[in-house]
Image (cartoon, rainbow, N blue to C red; front, side, top):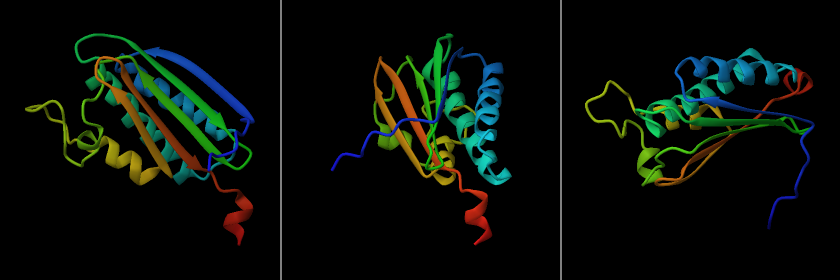
Length: 153
């Protein structure tokens, strides 16, 4: 059964060039946006770390030796769910399942741990990855921010 379409209570979109300095900018944008909804520090850190991993994947893997756009969309829903989409138009992923395996890296010989997707999955409620070789990759992260009242009980 399809999920009902909910309208976000707030939304932010930005497009950043795939420069390493913009990983920090993406984290800051997401952090500022999510802070409006009074998250706990651990929730905010989980989201910032996951965004950092996704954006770093765009910079390092999607565009490799070139610069291209990274589209960032952040939405907040009344249910406390934060939706974050990170989209690139880079080289794409041939085998998503393999790419999401811990310790896998598409850059052999590099000092990369291959844990980006594993980190995202451990810190978010859901991680969706869609990709086509030559057409880019879209990563959607979802994390529910619990209300302060929920922590009191």
